[in-house]
Length: 265
Image (tube, rainbow, N blue to C red; front, top):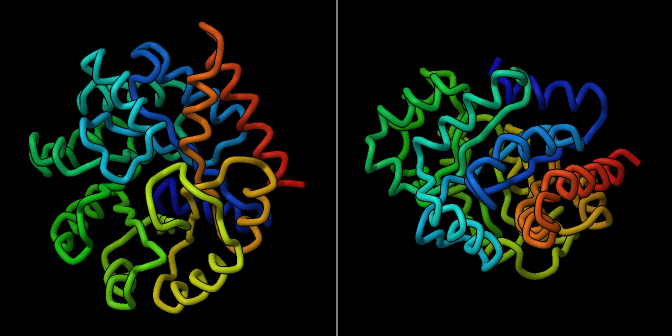
């Protein structure tokens, strides 16, 4: 089993909801990424999403856009991201790491090179926001052959056909976007999320993580009643932004621990 599959199996056996956390590689600076990854795990994160900086992150709200801009000022690119994963794996061989980003950096180096480098670095999967599942059967098969999970987004507007295609091609878990819009925007309607997840589960047998708009322990706990995992990104980036100089690691660890406590309460 992949690390992601193993993680969700362990969570289920312990009757726990997973916590998936996102940071942008290279933000607030190149030397901060690996310490932040470890801080997230120490705070209770079960799966890490590591964002690949990109100039046009179309699904992201202003918070993650700013994180990308900060990282790009240091010229942090996809090969640096592979390096951060390798460094993380020196002392952590168990926590899944999912690379999250957009097609352009992958297309630039080639999908085969991306898969080989991700596998060699110790990554566990990828979310490529602008890769539609209908066009990903070959890429998904190559990912599976390398032991990597290709994870897809599903939205409130996803059709039954799209959901069925994600069920066919996707691996690891499915990521349900709880809001119409970009990351970090709006308030979640948990009743609507519950209804949509019930419909999605008719096709998708993978665990389902819910993200976009989860900002605090109360919201995370409410979503956890119907989801296999909650996904938090923009709120963590805000902790990094608002931390005093040199304090981002402690701030992120403390915030993550608060979410973990709310989920476990």
